[in-house]
Length: 336
Image (cartoon, rainbow, N blue to C red; front, side, top):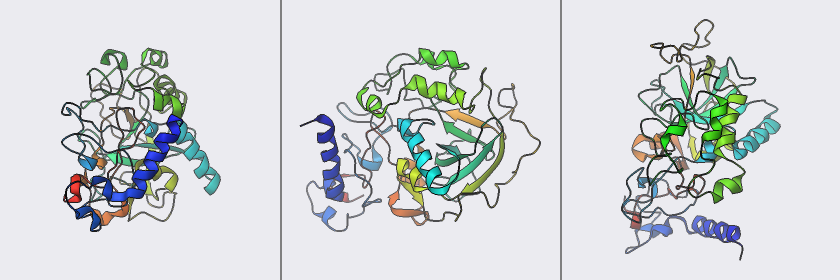
């Protein structure tokens, strides 16, 4: 049987099995999935090692164990992301780009996790509709940190440089820790595929093209500059976007358009100063790509009442960047 068909059938079996894929020595999983946080969530592979499910470790796995990573089709301009944009635009007669990343909102009880925002950016030819799935002390409340091809491996890099990293080779070709390469021409020095290249190739993506796309669409500038955010406001999350992450908020607004701008917006006067020494990141569209399991994939960061059943926690990927990890539960026998 063809390999892709085998993989597809395996995932179907996992989906049908529900939390029983965690069954080991007891019948706890038969009892409405025991104490699992996200029963009924989309199936995936079972994380191997001392911790499984939504507790799959973000680094330093035990020998033979697995790590959880960010997914590469979350990247701005991935083939799947572009298809989702087109489907949404056709359905709603809108005209937006899609993206995922970090919005440092202290006004939100869940710090923005799972919420969607509509961004107007001074250099970009259409609005960007984004979902925030990460948090970070370095991301301000009037800034969005977008996942783009080599946007910067960051402090908690799991992209390159270690035997457990997603991509081969050293970190030196990735440019700045925060921001990545400064020039489009430098994208060609990146490794095109992860250590396991098959899923990314099958998806029609490669890291070099994703890096170049960020420059082409002007979400980053030559020389390392950052665009300016002109307006930000929370909006309804479209299914075409939250299908990537499998997190959906229960308190979404009703419109895909901004009804009330975030605090400090619209911005009519302040230019992003992130490329100026000591300038800060206020009103900036910044960028990242650390390949790391995001904050929204940790159930301790989630308030159950603010998310929809079966879609309570971000579903991360294995080291290939595309294969989803099952996050219905976090332990064998469903008692966690």
